[in-house]
Amino acid sequence: MEFDLIERIRARTTVQRADVRLGIGDDAAVLAVAGGHDLVVCTDTLVEGVHFPARTHPADLGWKALAVNLSDLAAMGATPAWATLALTLPVGDAAWVEAFAAGFDALAREHAVALVGGDTTRGPLSVTVTAHGIVPRGAALTRAGACVGDLVFVTGCLGDAAAGLACVLPGHPREAALFAAPAAQREALVARLQRPTPRVAQGMALRGLAHACIDVSDGLVADLAHVCAASGVGAEIDAARLPASSALIDLFDAPERRALQLGGGDDYELCFCVADADADAAIATLARLGGGVTAIGRIVAGGSVRVHDALGHTVAPVRSGWNHFS
Ligand code: ADP
Ligand code: MG
Image (cartoon, rainbow, N blue to C red; front, side, top):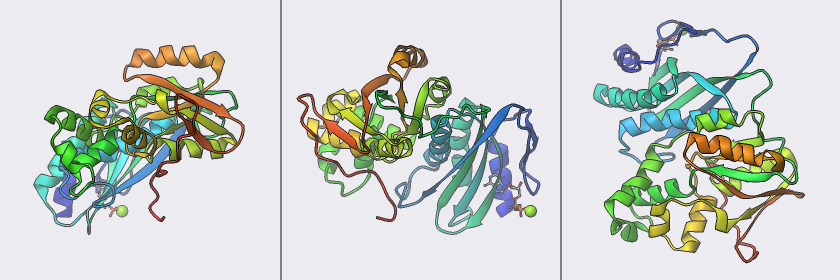
């Protein structure tokens, strides 16, 4: 059964790369890393009931398991190349595995990511993807390096995925109001939760431009705080500048929207810091790639992330990110 499932995954994942000397089928993969480059590696696990609701469509899960990892590579400025997939399944459901692999492959094709190995075991549903990318030697973006005076930017919009979660989680406080919302708007928010777009091209374009970069997986304030800690700086964010989708604006009042934008996770946008002198270049470069880019604040001395409104009043701290063990 296990080998039948592995064969289905192998058959359903279609990306072939010349630098894969040996892929699925041996004890390990053999990958040719180009000279003068650094290998960038990340891994992320999605557990049913923790990272995604039970009965999430397997194709969405396959997409998202890869997307969250490509988002980490994007935050490092890396070009994705290879992935491995560790699947733990309660039952050996061939149709489920094929749908999962198809969702994974849809995103893998967009970024030419070859699936080169993995592991398949029985147990409570959980998916771990390890992604490998490459950067010119020394060019990886990191969380360290933000300087006082840098502008803080974010790609795309914030808060949609958290709003999408409110749409799909039974018993959520906003459930009734969201159920009454237009289907197109609900679907747009849920799509941002289930099929996030990793900002791969943006991350690569920020090499040599951004002083620091992180992807927004736990919530803007929590993730920007990681940049501040790694860089030894603080940040001032202007809540009025936070980018919001039209669905978020239509369905939530300003305080609710702000809480989603500042504290909601799962957006997988990039938050990055750029010197004033390079800000125009960064905006122009990212504008060409589409998806939007917005200046939301500045790096300051200190160590914390402060948020203020249009009148300069401090916005109360929101639930600050996701922490499994708190
Ligand atoms: P081993 O016992 O040597 O670890 P396995 O029997 O677990 O090998 O796996 C056989 C081959 O199938 C290996 O190349 C492994 O990387 C690959 N593989 C196993 N599970 C998956 C999966 N979920 N996705 C992709 N490749 C997989
Ligand atoms: Mg082996």
